[in-house]
Length: 112
Length: 112
DNA sequence: TTTATGCGAAACCATTCGGTTGCAAATATA
DNA sequence: TATATTTGCAACCGAATGGTTTCGCATAAA
Image 1 (tube, helix red, strand yellow):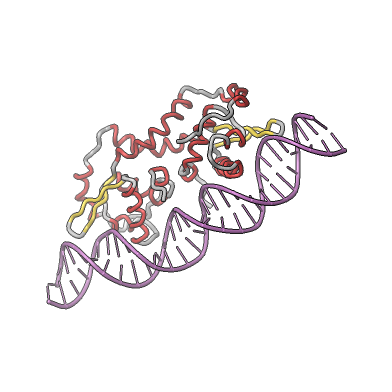
Image 2 (cartoon, chains in turn brown, red, orange, blue):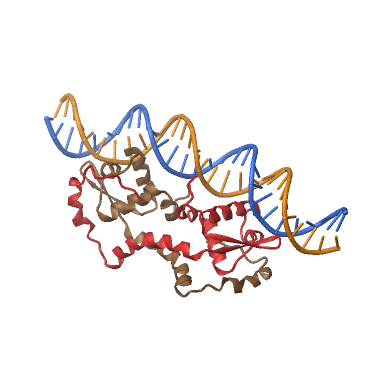
């Protein structure tokens, strides 16, 4: 079961939940009111977001308030950073580098 | 069949492909050499990335070079922007705003 | 104490996903 | 021309995904 932040934000409902909670902490019922889906469905999304440490729970009586761990969002920003460098420095010389490709063979495994 | 950029980068192999191609345009076979998966599997990833306009094809004889549409990556950056504002201005007053939650009811459908 | 509310967890279901295998088309090479 | 290479596509498969329904457990309210 993959459970990283990129998989977490792949779902549009989860992205909306993140945006909602960024503004103010909310309970599952309050969150579910904003969507055309059931509370249980939202609950599953909250579980996924919590498991990858994007959300944090705060119990208040029988209610649970979910708050956004904003720092976790930086992980996405850090991955984007490498590409931001490219488009900001107008590094559009991809065609030039294109000729080298044939020599690149049997290099070590590439992992993210 | 969802096919947006967030779903595209959810898969670790696809993120690695994006990073690879950002450096230099590559053919499917050359790309597949970098992974422990089959050429056909990579081909499917390339199809998905192309369908959501992250990659562009350039036919050269019987080879097809895939190049990164770097501008498309900005769409992710734009979504992150709202959160970057929060963590950069050290807006960690989420607890304060927490009290308002009970009034928020029956507001219009929330969509991303 | 009894009832209502808020919530998570488990079971189940249809769909999607990532991968493999096999094939056909196009181009390059012998 | 005959053969080899590069590639996309369709069919298939097991696993994961997102959703619903049902249930049980706390806590709050009557």
